[in-house]
Length: 316
Image 1 (tube, helix red, strand yellow):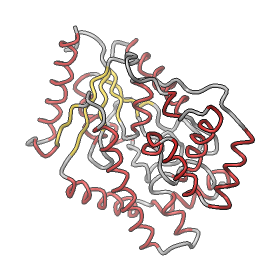
Image 2 (tube, one colour; image 1 turned 30 degrees about the horizontal axis):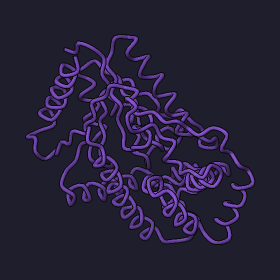
Image 3 (cartoon, rainbow, N blue to C red; image 1 turned 90 degrees about the vertical axis):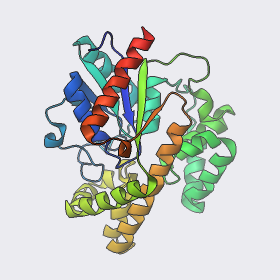
């Protein structure tokens, strides 16, 4: 079917159904899947990250799931290197590669590349920023980041302490925003990619988000978080700041009721979905597909494959 390799990127907001569609596309096209999810990379973070089970993977090889210990740091640069290696390995075996997930930063790092700043580690600045976060609150630093690097602030969650501090450290050390170091502009993309974003009407998406949160609670999310928090290093890890984990951790720590934790998780997930949509709306390369405009999943899968194939032929 395909005359040459061209990476398919299948993205969209959380709960839209990317995993199921990606598996079906991969089944038809002899493809393997590379996950682009910043929480599914961690071992043990399963229910809250909606990590696909072996049954849901339907025999399709999945890469970059369970590749990191939550007690260890994991950078975008490391993800980029691992994803690139997986893509090239898949292609070397005459198979197609589908990069799928909702972490826009991970996907952009792979297809566009990043010039990660070297020599910008500044322990004195970092210590000062950590002290400010402890004494005045992370919101103070986030407001600073919005002023000096609005592009990075729009991509970093306001509770992501590590990335907020890192972005400010780079700015205070170099005088330039972290976003300056990204490879953009006239530089060609690292991979010839077809980017497809799945979407659906906002009200329907929000209902799916709320239903998934409730299903995750029923599936044992509280027990999963309790087990993870039994390791001190995980309790304080960046992974524990992921959706579904920080909210339930607050309940376990007695900082809110279970009802409040669930309501917060639903609200934060809706907000995350809005940020994901905003991220890709800035990219003119994206093909948007409303799932509700197709009579069934099979029709959607056929359309995605036809679009992928057409883009490959166009590039020849």
